[in-house]
Image 1 (spheres, rainbow, N blue to C red):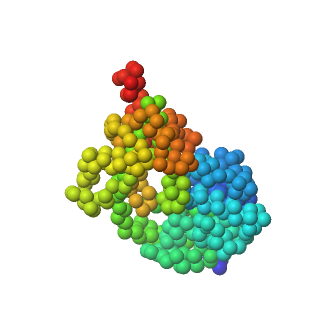
Image 2: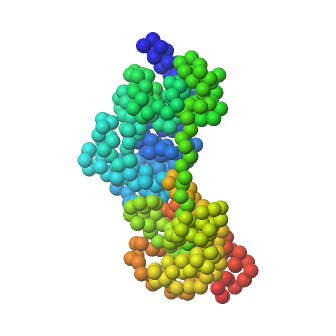
Image 3: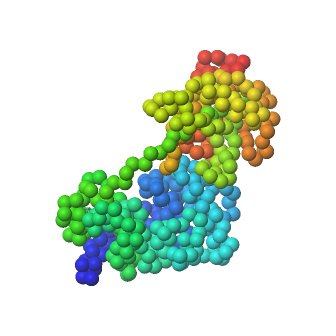
Amino acid sequence: MRKVRGFRSALLAHFDRTRRNFPWRFDRTPYRVLVSEFMLQQTRASTVLAYYEPWLRRFPDWNALAGASTEEVLLAWKGLGYYARARNLHRTAAIVRDRYQGCLPRSPAVLMTLPGVGEYTAGAVGSIAFGLCAPAVDGNVRRVLARLLDAERPSASRLREEATRLLDPARPGDFNEAMMELGATVCTPRAPRCGDCPVARHCEARKEGTVAHRPAPRPPRKIPRTDYATAVPVDPQGRSLLVKRPETGLLAGMWEFPAVELLPESKRPGGSGGGSGLEDSNVETAALKRLAELGVSGKMAGRLAPVRHAFTHLRAVYHPVVVRCGEQALRQLHLPKKQAVRADPHDLDSRALPVAQQKIGARLAAWLRDCCQVATRGPYD
Ligand code: SF4
């Protein structure tokens, strides 16, 4: 036990001296803590900095968030990625307002019933916002513990057990943050700074000389690639068309240029090697067909450079095809009004558009500018 006490005091003293002054560390109300924890999932603190305070100005409390539309929420989250987090936070706000009278439940077990709240988030919120003795094991803490234990692949239960044993009951929230901070700034994946580490004398991997091998790397996952033919219609005013994605699944409820999935790589001729195996004519035909389904006809006018985006489970490659349409084409769609909008590619900021679609919009805007430079009367005159 003396050793554990020594570990806690060394870690917390280091944290008190060196902690980074993130805005989410100044005000520990449950709402703010939960917002920061959602934003920080799989995202660097330096990225979250640009979003946290604007979000709080826009949605200062549970009621403001619960009362907002999905579109407003996705727009405020735009660029932060993993949009399911925004939707889950929105749904959580409604549950807190309607079921818990505006007070986030304290118990980690109850917190885990809320959308998007897993064991880690429940532990972080329970300890930081409510001072409960709940461990919080994220990726950084997992690495630190594996090294402290000199364990190659510690199981989740062993990590939880060790995190619970070490947790300081007097300052559980600070302790959890100190462990995360240690992993983010000292005990980093590559080149950990063991010479500066406040808990080096408690570290088994350091004693054994195995730091570089703890934890053992996970075998690389093969992430499948999916190609999309993306139709980018343009009317004579330079307006394009965005359609809304389904309300469930990947990028739910966000806007995109109309797209259709092409055959998976493994099923395309010559598709298993380095080349895409895609023929230009197939991409263009698929894009025109997708537009025809929406009731839009037009002529192929050009191709934009493909846009790649890596999701956790998927490498997406979008092949944008610019299609020239007539004056009325984008007004007579086979879609309800709320599912499609005409949009100026120079002004897409007001839409909840995923990063890859923003890039397509930027490429379209550049393409339109180039067209206007070569044809002084405009691209379609
Ligand atoms: Fe990590 Fe090195 Fe500290 Fe061990 S001594 S916890 S490996 S930084």
